[in-house]
Image 1: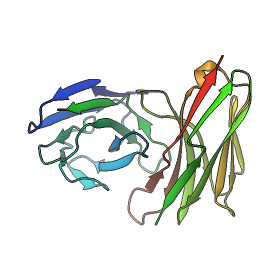
Image 2 (image 1 turned 30 degrees about the horizontal axis):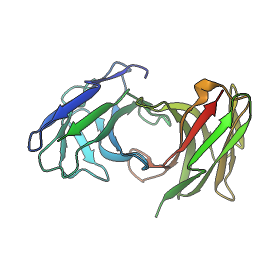
Image 3 (image 1 turned 120 degrees about the horizontal axis):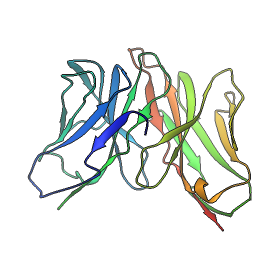
Image 4 (image 1 turned 90 degrees about the vertical axis):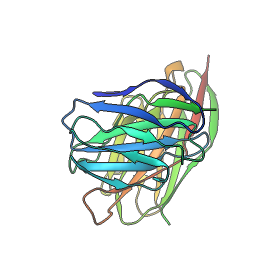
Length: 112
Length: 115
């Protein structure tokens, strides 16, 4: 898991509530990413950020929001607009120009 | 459309045996190919990264090959151990023209090692 932490490991929420997933890294990486993983599917990119105070939408950004106020932190908010939020969420980071991403341990979100 | 296809979808082998996992891709322009190991409920961990000019790369009992002409890669696991039970994900990186390469993930091969 390297120097990336995600909390909590398991999260339960009622439908209609917003929820924020935490991602912190101490690797001094400029870039950070959020992915969603569903059973039988490959990882899908939600948002990414290459520098503080800047971020870009990935392939499935609808219903999600992020912020990047500090280099070390990249929280993801799953809003009530996300139609199917139950999934395993992975955060990753990489240094600029590097080929490898380092992943956190993941947060499993269940919305009922 | 950039795609990464992995086979088989799942595989069960006996401890001590060898196995080979396949990855075919249609990604362009190609930057590099990575294999990750993901234990259940954990984040993926990198095994190997290969660029266009690299044909083979090893990491302990894991050996990855890349044929850039046929756009195929394989991950060979030698003398399997129970701890090898995991999902193995093939990821192909492509030049996006921006600051960060694009990534296309395969769905993974779920490997189970039986004692």
